[in-house]
Amino acid sequence: MSGMLEAYAEVAGEEVIDHLRQLSEPLAGMTMVHVNSTRVGGGVAEILDKLVPLSNELGIDTRWEVINGNMEFYQCTKSMHNALQGNPLRIPDHLYQAYEETNVANAERLRGVLEEADVVFIHDPQPAPLLGLCPNRKGKWVWRCHIDVSHPDRIVWKYLRQHLSAYDASVFSLPAFAQPLPNLEYIIPPSIDPLSEKNVDIDADELQEVAERFNLDTSRPIVAQISRYDRFKDPVGVIRSYRLAKKFMPQLQLVLAGGGASDDPEGELVLEEVHSAAEEDDDIHVLLLPADAHRTINALQRIADIVIQKSIREGFGLTVTEGMWKGKPVIGGDTGGIRLQVVDHHTGFLVNTPEGAALRMRYLFRQPAKMHEMSSKAREFVRDNFLLTRQLREYLTLSVGLLH
Ligand code: UDP
Image (cartoon, rainbow, N blue to C red; front, side):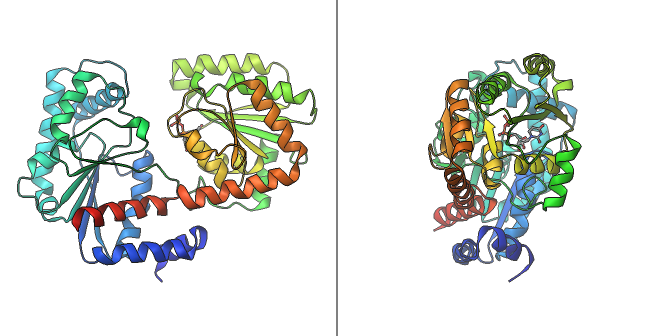
């Protein structure tokens, strides 16, 4: 077995890789192209970075193309992104024009590859017009939407829709994120890469070092929420639940870790609220992390006994997946994609209030056997459902379905 597949077999299981091999048989020798708008940064690029070589190792001739544009193009797609996620915005005509011109220029460069490909995955709105610019396409084209377009600005959606209607299929991350389109619609949830810095195994010495760096006592119970400082993540509610639980468990420590607050005025405000809610309690650790602190986040999730994600509104909730992969029961807000991951009483607990979260914390610390059982269920649930290999499997299944 070749390099990357073997590495993934070790964490995801041999049977997962065998399944991928079976599914890729009917696709052997075919060409597949993924197109997005950046090679680095962001979840989509991170996943493609692994998915593309894996799919090549499976014998599918897979390429990853990136469209590039000028500043106006990115201004347009940024506004589009915000408008599609529900912030009404008027995009000036000259920006739409830059969007279309950029796609025309990229189509000139990529037409040969795209028209010849058997399957093309176009990720997000940036390269969406490419299909209309490849009149002699031979293969099946899929629009893969990674964002929540359920409540879009109608004008922006209407504009984008005209570029999407000729696609053979569209893929959304959750049913709640979708919009009706006149083609086959699929749901493929996000996934995490078990071999990335954010998720790879870390040895005990390194964990101890990180704990010491942040003054955490690993001989005492620790709960952690890793999240942007955002009201929808309810960090102040987490502090309230910690305080309620602490009355019964004086040894309890809380970690709240997040980044990016300094370049986001709203985030700065939330961080202030968090600091004032934490007051003088030395057992509450409010950490501000740099954007690239992936390994630190990984370690903190491992050091914690329980991961909390007490959101009151959430997209998918990748921090929940990350925590569960590290074998932590997750106490999560009963909302969005958290519901898909936290199977109440099995992989964690769904809660609606600080009182509920406190109750679940106390319950888990009192019942080590239950904690242990939920830990392994949480990890297995992610192994079965939310690893990168599962996402690849679904892309292959979809491709086979469209081609045969
Ligand atoms: N994250 C990070 N630094 C932080 C806080 C979060 O890198 O300071 C990561 C976190 O590990 C996860 C992602 O950012 O991978 C957040 O995704 P999620 O779906 O949980 O929430 P979002 O921030 O997209 O609402």
